[in-house]
Length: 404
Image (cartoon, rainbow, N blue to C red; front, side, top):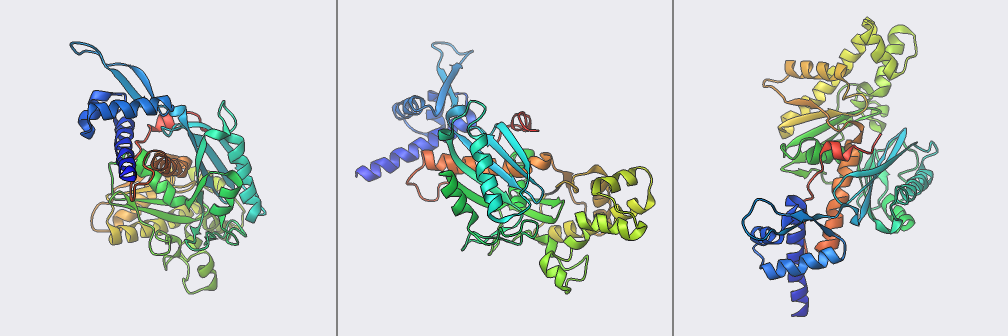
């Protein structure tokens, strides 16, 4: 009976904290009405949550006849989480409060040697950011790491990550967890970006959403019915391996992907070099296109056709309500307009294609969403099976207030 009573108490607590998180500032009487719990139960649990620092009072109700009621909200400073975006060239770490707002951010070039050097770099940056800006490392509870590859569910190694050597040789989540002393979750970076756009960028309005990232590589994150689609081996959305663009039967296409060879950074650089004999960076090719360089414009047109084919392939299979284009290359206006144009030419109905609202911080937002959900479950729903707590997203302005 004691165990059953404890579980019942946990269920009540998770219902109350969920209500305060979603509707705060809110009075205890309103929490009671919304949860169906007795006023006494709500008062006791809210008092305990306030004493432990998880909720705080923020004034009183106004505009009502009679005695005004105290209202409560989640205390943002009660705990912190770390969201990490590991890229082939840059490593970003954001420290977020309990409401998802970014407290501070660190950005460094990714360790070129790869492998465990990257693991140690992540651990160092997380420890550094968690002890700055008036925060304590003791407040850090969860870290989520976005990686440019597929975490192997059995070994924890990161597969299909050609841009970071040696990261497929060890269990990244387990070793980071040992190094940091907090829960660590590892997820594909494009999947995190899809979650971030669904959670924050589009405010949950599109429960069927595809996020296509084009940068060093190309990949997709798929949100169906409000949930991330991972697939049997966690590789759903690896559209770089779609069998068009380059010859899919060439050995190189098994390493990088036929589409990725013709629809990402290297394709732009190599394409311009082949056409002109001149070596330019990706930003320089975009600048040349803006300056009426026809070779540069033709390359961007070729790239956008390949991306449009990928978008149409996704739409034909899963029929999302919205396709969001992001990544360092994909979100550029010059390319986005071309993608929309070419997709219109090869699909019989209009496709809603939009630019990422979170830019290069979409994966950090997705990491924050996952970390906060895990944190709320571990803190307020311990012992309950299958519980998922939906944490409301901050506005984009609040999330990005402290990031570069």
